[in-house]
Amino acid sequence: MTDDPRLSRRTIIKGGAGVAFGIGSVGALRLFGTPDAKQNPADCTTRDLSASDKQFIISNWPLYIDENSKKNPSTLQRFEKATGINVSYTDDVNDNDQFFGKVKNQLGTCQSTKRDMFVLTDWMAARVIDFGWIQPLDPAVVPNLHANIIDSLAAPAWDPKRTYSAPWQSGLTGMAYNKKYLPKGIKAYSELLTRSDLKGKVTMLTELRDTMGLIMLGQGTDPAKFTDAQWQKAMDALRKATNDGQIRRFTGNDYVQDLSAGNVLACEAWSGDIANAGDDNLVFVPPEEGMMIWADNMLVPNLATHKTNAEKWINYYYEPEVAARLADYNQYICPVKGAQQAMEKIDPGNVDNELIFPTDETLKTTHRFMALDESRTKNYGRQFSDVTG
Image 1 (cartoon, rainbow, N blue to C red):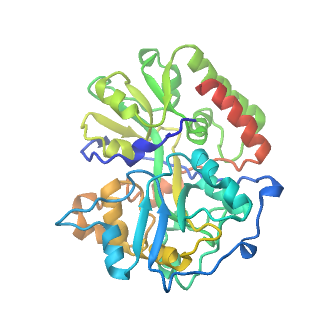
Image 2 (cartoon, rainbow, N blue to C red):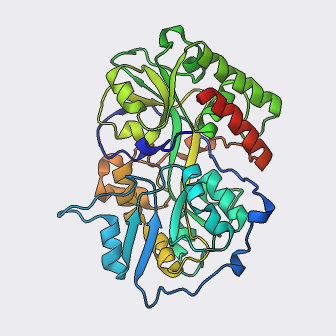
């Protein structure tokens, strides 16, 4: 994987790119770590300074929060004014594995990361929770989370009661094409791997679970339940397409530019990228086979010194109006019930935007990627990296 596989998902260029909408998948995974790295969260705590020290330190993905302006204060600024809590906000989570490397030694030995919260994607959130590196949230401080989280995100297998985690935003992985250069478009994910008129004009993602999940769907395999033989079949298809020159490259942060320029005609894509690309010729397409869906989750690590302040942050972002303001900016799936109604006052044009508020019918067609143990994680990761470079 690249160091920054999803940076473009936080793009700040807003525009009117097209969407041809339909289907989806939940990338909620459980990974099992090495036993000697595990902690008991109850044995790795410190005194909470929240009452006397009104601050809070968070690490999030780049360009993932609305910006402040004189006429329209950001949600962060509104939080600070409403609570009196000063937020130290850092966008240093450029990649799940990279960030894991930053904090694993401290968390694995019950040392402080100097953070009160960080935001990780489902599969990595599952991993650090399984290690015992994350503190349980106090339900009394986060009532909005439990009251307002949308049903499709309320009970992932790795945190079924949302004891440790709260989705920040969610999104879809599907396809995109440039209608200026490919007027007939693309419908099936398998076309990316096989269509001769797309040869050398296709990009795919460096995220294993996105790319391999969609290939499996194209082969009629459920990404939530597959055998090693089915994995190998999907891997063989990816390897063949790569060796045949079908795939231009694997990318995580700059496919939109190539797509706009016509260097790439069709690609695997994240929904928010296309919605915010500022190019009306770009169209996001749910493959006929289905899509993958993921969430990035707020987590409070062991030895966080401002745990209650972090929980107040979660509770604040689960207020429907706040959630609507955030989603209006970044165009990702909003995890908060009531935000769609709140959007009527904030931006009526986004009330029926399925990239933000997918219908129940759409969500019922989603798929999840199978839980992987550590052995399979390493084995599959090596095979995928051998092909993606």
